[in-house]
Length: 98
Length: 496
Image (cartoon, rainbow over all chains, first blue to last red):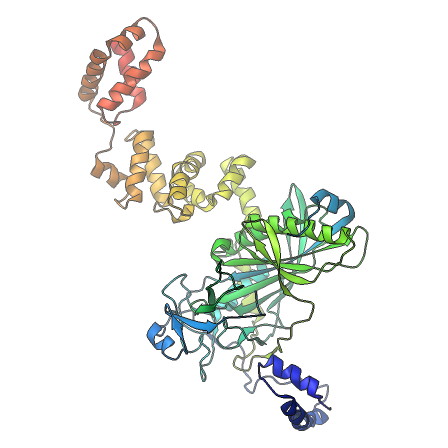
């Protein structure tokens, strides 16, 4: 598997990471190494082994529908970079959602 | 402004195909993954904790009641229930989700392959359900600085995460074809059916105006007789049953105009504008989204046992349409009376009032008359009015026993709504009982006859309609606390 700088640029875009052209060139072969390492697993994975998504052999871990105390607004907003009217203030949102 | 064609002209050449994605907020007490309350409103960011704020190190735990509600919804929609399924992370960067992902379900929905029948103008349409899956609601964004509170032109945005993590079900139909020119009405009827079903199951308030139930309406046009589906648009911001119908009708007319002019319908999200009655272009969906779904590592799979599923199936309520038909028969209501009661949200209330011993017609009279009027005045739903069905039944009993008359009953209602107690208590406290003291009534009649000698003379001369003025005078004298029929009888006796 050989990742191109274009592939990396797309991934960077999805992850909202800004990379320069030089960084894209440098990252592509580095990510290749990681993908190759992961690909080695496929050599032992056979069709009769289902993909594993969880380390625990558990299902149906539920909690009762009971209300528990929430944090205070002061505590919640203490870590916010910016606050207005007890709400998190975020910069203008462009080009996404609607 | 987009061009639109006449609806019938579009329908002459094209078939409309619907696809409806409906989000329903469950009415659980606590959120999907944490114990924060789901209560509507509340001061901003007071219903949050490390889990629903997505703080590092916090871990979600599934609300068992939400899974139960999801299965019941699936069963009521005739779905298969997965024997084993997982949650998935849907990754996207948008500040309404503090985790930067939404926990949802992807290729393993809890419920799938269902169907439901809706009726429009006496014709039944089958709607196939693709899936019902579990996820969480997002926080509420307020855009500041724009002219209209919209995202366009906003200077910045504010976030309240009280709603983030509230259990949300997504119900998705398969493409619905063969609707003839009835697509908008079928869309609306389907939403009404879901709303009734959610309430009958008691899993959601299902109030579109509050955002408990939201509809993304997909529609496309295909030339009559064609096999391949046309390009669809998805209309959001459809917040009432009426809007579902209007938005679909508008989109069909708009797409019809695009196609008639030789154009191509763009695959995009559109926003319904309630004020103008139009849809406007939103996000383009030409490029498939890449949400990089993967199995949610923080939650173990859900594997409902068949015993549990069957237990829940056995506990399902009577389907709303069937119940309505049964009640109409039991109550002897005409189709119109039943439709009015339904539209007013009075079916449950009438049922409870009848169960408390009132005749169906009397129960209907109060709920659709005086109480509906007062609910309307205070901007309340009928079931939010501060008078219980048992109290309405008590009011009717006081009326039947001639303790009060119709006019006094309205004052009793006023007292009950003001929190002055039960109807009997209000009658006592306000002294509203009809005066049964014959002496007092006879005196009042004598005074009225003396004061209205002209009218009395007319009645004596056989002009019986003049008795109305005399009854009115007596009622005023008695401050309304008399039985009009008894007053009339007494006057006629006295005047020979």
